[in-house]
Length: 159
Image (cartoon, rainbow, N blue to C red; front, top):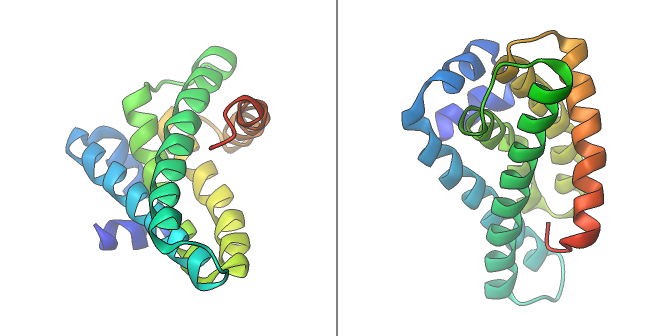
């Protein structure tokens, strides 16, 4: 699993293309997102006075919810607005591994910031490979998806 995460973090196009077509990696992507959430929760605890157990549990719940929402929105935007060729399962796999840089959240706020920016890049690569379209359409899909994700976040404050 961590070898796959490393390949994802390196923005390995062949890896993302393989993940798109490999149904057996769906569970691994979900577990990876949960592990990233737990480590981010651990980082919050280390760099604050919070509760470790609550931080880890909320990190897992928040990461899984955000991943599923990101996958659903990206699938809808990419297919409906930009003629992408993907489905929710494919998008959830590639975007699950695109979370790899967020593992830096274990290093606190700076790690979260760097990991978030890096995840934008890995997310764009994941979207491009998952939707089988151009970089421009991947960036547009990511941008529209981000706006919709932020709007949804107002109504679902835990994501």
